[in-house]
Image (cartoon, rainbow, N blue to C red; front, side, top):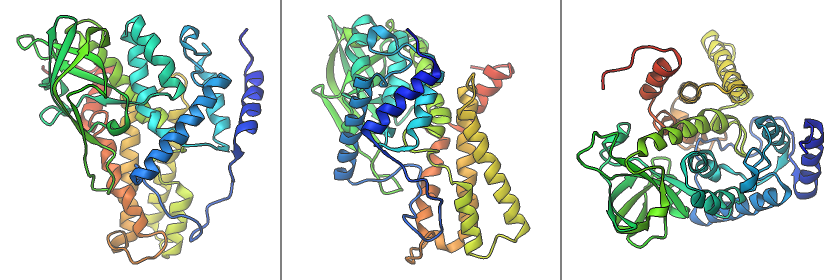
Length: 398
């Protein structure tokens, strides 16, 4: 029997009260507490491992209580409820201190929807409950050194050998591949076919012999991204997603899910609030602290910051959702503009660490913001998607 929203909310509150502490609702005050703000939180290996364990333990509790996959099909352990029930859960959970769930963004926001839409019964039964239970983590194995935004130009090969596929090649910018259990892989399976026709998708077990994962040092100081090498690695055909040479169709589902995750869920939820967005009240206090709040240009920028922040927040709550390409582009554009505006306010203080609270710490936001204009598709690709898919403008020549 489907509960009412009020009954469901009461169930959620009982679960959260029994398993988590309420979050403090203290207002931000300049100079007090941590001054860290970043798009991608940088952690040491030990901190990262501890965060993963804590997140997995929380997801296991959610699953056992019936909140692990609120909208999922019941045959795979979901509740089969409408998205508005998930929204109720997320809104209530935001008032409690729970482990960040951002490391599940790719697993639950990208890989799981792809398996659900295109995977075999075996793939669904094997991986969907484990993903939503937090038992395993997933990454994407898509981009390559020679195929970024033009992903259809990928060169990683998958050669059929009986009921197995032999994988050879390289992927790059694979977030969290260093502690993922599986990855969504695109590989070329027919060289003579048009580039979008000769690609096949696979769920790739990361422990497969012949797999080498190498973390990449980012300019933010972290190593969240990785390059992954495949040296005649073998996987069984049952790990294939969709038909042979139909991987581009599968990828379109993946792409829409990723953009929605960045533009909507990533902007509004995921266990850490409005990820990567500078809260307007914090920037207002920054301007006041440095005696800039009466400058008419600064005041105009603060108004624009507030407006952009609220628009991103409201886009995350739209029903039906905003087109993924539009939401992703709008979020990335706002975060980058905000980071540049804050850098103008701080001037040299954002470039040199003097130890002054609330100054140099903003560099992490400035350095990480540019990644949002690239990951999940560049701004230019997003604008093409909006123009062609939303506004119905003529397509660009192939």
